[in-house]
Image (cartoon, rainbow, N blue to C red; front, side, top):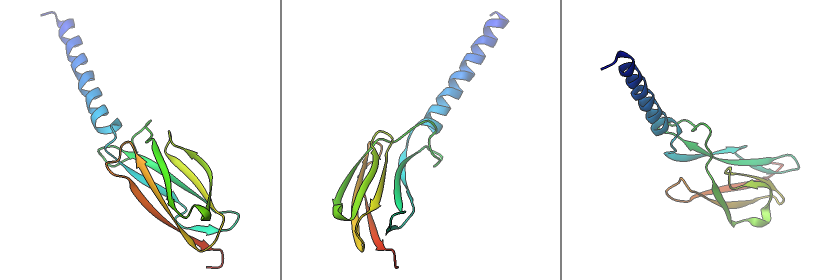
Length: 128
């Protein structure tokens, strides 16, 4: 066998192995988690809660260059919040409180999640 052909074949197999490893363990989404900032929602003119769906790879880190499309359903407490912005393709929602002292029940269904996730968000008055 030609020496140049052997080296080319070895490099090709090495690149195929590295590509397979990167796809299976770095870029493939295994589960999702939720980033909620700030953790508490207050009835004032400043607090805007961001809820973001984060796709995780097999190492438990955010999968690079990936997003987790999700649908957001408000099951309870629609009168207590105003939706500022939502993007189902990118998987985030921004909400703001319009009434004090209540709770909002939000269900998130991601295409990468096995089951829907329900979040209970208490709305506090500014005095607490």
